[in-house]
Image (cartoon, rainbow, N blue to C red):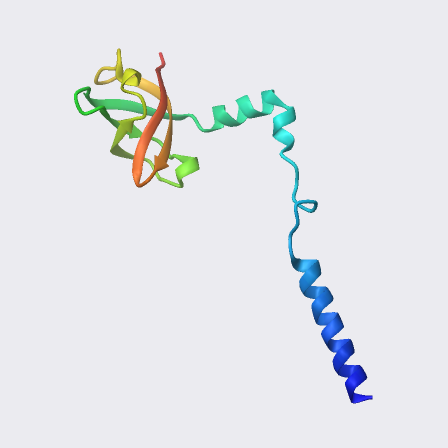
Length: 118
């Protein structure tokens, strides 16, 4: 009788562990892949507003005073970003109002897109 209880307890525990393990079949599909307009909308949400304070083309860096960066969980501040592509800095000058996207890769804060706004 005691052996039956032990076996039953082990069976229940094993079933609980097996049920809790995620599998490929239980993971949600990437539904956004079917809706490119949703992806464009999501990228718009990553745009942040800022003002160019300094451009250092030789170093490939730009100093921006920016609002909150939601995707980086960062409050408004002024900081230096590295341009993911130095061509992003072409045409930028101090005082320009901009909309940009930023990311963090290997500890470096990058501007991945930037455009001047009126």
